Length: 80
Image (cartoon, rainbow, N blue to C red; front, side, top):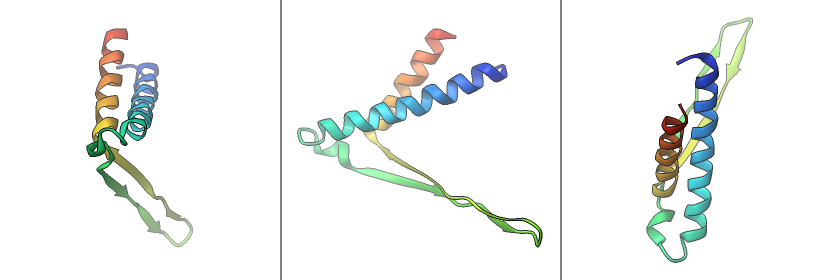
């Protein structure tokens, strides 16, 4: 994959996650199992005397967002 395709893939996958999450929230009154979610957290940190950083990344996944992710990947494969 070239650099441009990688950036497009990441953007499409993030869009798929957001789309799936929104669909899950809309359909949750009728399909309550779509509300069940799992949070994945990654917090790298370092203190190097002259440089100190603390990052916090968190992804909340549910069944609908995983479906949106799969749909986004399928769309990407059809495009490229």
